Amino acid sequence: MASRIDAVKIGGRIKKAREALELSQSALAKRLKVDQSTVALWEKGETMPRLNSVGTVAEELAMTPEFLLFGIVQNDCHRGRHTQHHGGGIGVEWGAPGRGEP
Image (cartoon, rainbow, N blue to C red; front, side, top):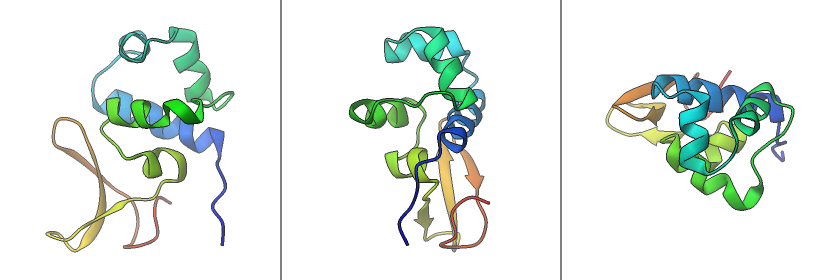
C-alpha cells in the first residue's frame, strides 16, 4: 500500500518536534532561511516544505525525512520498539513496532 503525504500530519510533526527542541517558529524559520509565516503555514497544514528542502527541515528537527513526510520510524534495536528521536535526547514513541504513528 502506498503512503500518502498528509500536510496536516506533517505540520503536526513539525510543531511537535519544534516545541520539543524548545524553538520558536521564528528561531526555526531563521535556521531554515524562511519566513516565520512559512513555518506557521506548515504547522497548520496549509502548505508543506518543498521536496528539495525536506532533508534540511528534517535535519533541523532531529528526525529523518521519512518520519517528517510519512511518520515512518526507525527501529530502536536496543529497546525492542520503534522510536523517533528528537534533539536533546528526547525520544517520542509511536505505536507498536512497524506501525508508525497513531
